[in-house]
Length: 232
Image (cartoon, rainbow, N blue to C red; front, side):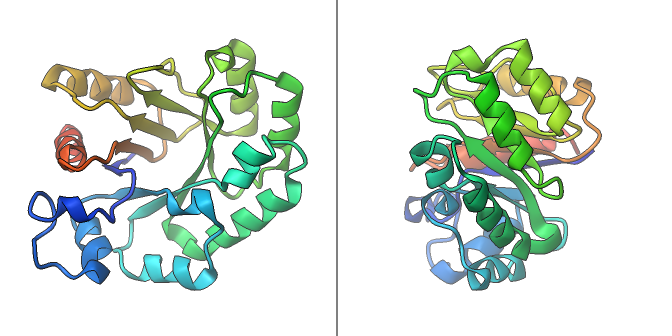
């Protein structure tokens, strides 16, 4: 098991002087980021499917072993709300595969007002390709149910354990790999120790990706670096 830490996104001008050198060219931000972290969550893919040129360009700027987690296209999760999405899911995952071995999980972040629907969810899980890891972030508490977790486990998909000021996902493992989104604005040493202990004890046998929130003060990179040191 590797624990790959990072942030949600990397291309933030306010991080200059806090994380990035002031004079670092924008085109070198990803390479600089990847020299310090093992993974990044790409939010760009929520808005549009990336071109093969774009994904191959990302992959070329990071070292072997680095992973890109892609947030799934909003037309799948927010517009269609998981209904009638088989062609969109296929197109998105085909684009994701251009990252080759540097592709991490695809994150399907559900809308906050989408309530649990077991039949809908089962149909959607059946559409997913088995060669691309999938994680699900539920933002309505009705999804936090044994039926949801059993469905994920059967599909080999991960529950995204998200920690926010408004809603916290139960700390549960449904797949050999893990996906954490630690979104609070502040984490104490005790908080990070608690999360690290859970990751070590949860039984993961494949990569665990853990992403902290981006904000102008660049606390996210600091938390990510501190969290990564707990697994050295």
